[in-house]
Amino acid sequence: MVELPVLVLNQNYEPLNICRVRRALVLMFNGKAEALENGRGELTCSMGVYHIPSVVRLIYMVKRPRLRRRATRTEIFSRDRYTCQYCGKETRDLTLDHVVPRRRGGEHKWENVVSACAACNHRKAGRTPTEAGMRLRQQPYAPRDSDFFVPYHYLRAHGEWQKYVPISGNNMPEGGKPAA
Image 1 (cartoon, rainbow, N blue to C red):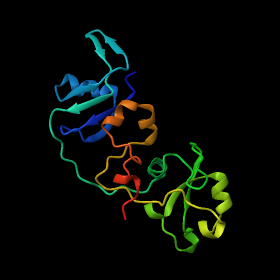
Image 2: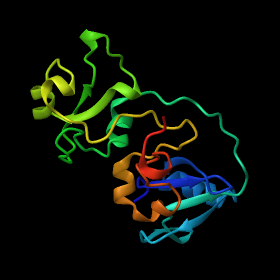
Image 3: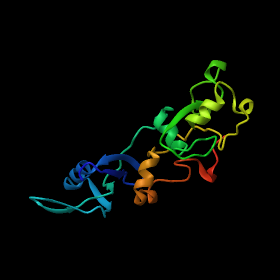
Image 4: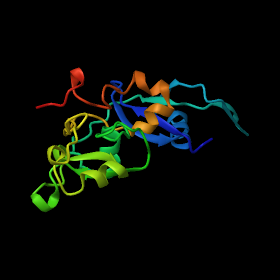
């Protein structure tokens, strides 16, 4: 129970971090955070019975630097919602596909990498989608630097977090379309 994930919000309700129940309880006991969402049950210890939080908000404002996110496997899969961008199959068994193959000068960057199932990646091979007769379901895009990254599987498993983390495209710009 103490290893479950907890969403940590800044004083202004902006998502900051994901920690474990143990850390969230310590923040609450020290008066640094308050629980906003409970409902996972109770934790009994020698000091009493405590509700297990799912979302906590810090009492004070934390200023954090805005770092440019790297195009890692996890973040690309999450951006694409663990869905093959060619056939639409939703699975955890995905590969990365470079829209313009690297051997043809394609770079490993947000705008050139998509999630693909093994069958589609094999079918596309070292060609562009047009040459392979395949169509992308969504053009790859770089997420805004100001967005907080929450892995998509957390949002699916913890529905109560959706009130605090924008779900539209898992931090996709407004309107559901990538920023130009």
